[in-house]
Image (cartoon, rainbow, N blue to C red; front, side, top):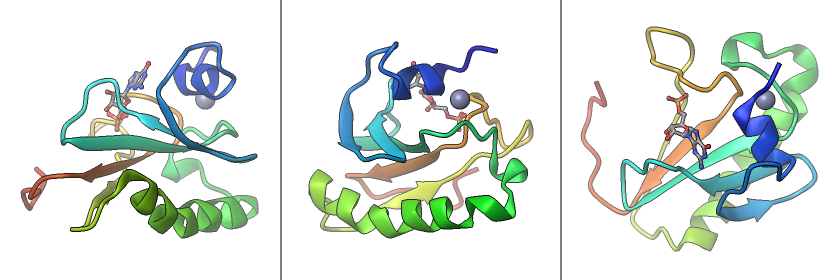
Length: 112
Ligand code: 5GP
Ligand code: ZN
C-alpha cells in the first residue's frame, strides 16, 4: 500500500523539510492554512491516533517534547496550535499520523 507521508519520509517524494531526526520528520504543508504550517510525522507508519499502541508511547512523547524546539526553529514567538484530525468526521485526508503545527496569525476558535 502506498502512503504519501511514508514516501516523503523516505525522500521518494520531495518536501520542504524544517526538522528531521531518526524517528521524526517535520515539513511544510503543501496547502498552508496559516503563514506557518508544518506537519510533524513519525517516520514509522501509523494510520491515525486511533491506531496508537502502548509501544508508541515513547515515540509520541518524543514528538510532543520536540514541539518547542520546532517552534524555535520556525521563529514562533506568539504561540502556535497543534491539530490532529482523526478519521472521517475530522476530515483526516492522509492516513499516516500527523500533527499540524499552525502559527503566524491569530487563529480562530473553535476551528470548526
Ligand atoms: P489532514 O487533512 O489529513 O489532517 O491533513 C493532511 C495534510 O497533508 C493537508 O494539510 C495537506 O495539505 C497535506 N498534504 C497532502 N499531501 C501532501 C504532500 O504531498 N506534501 C505535503 N507537503 N503536504 C501534503
Ligand atoms: Zn505512511
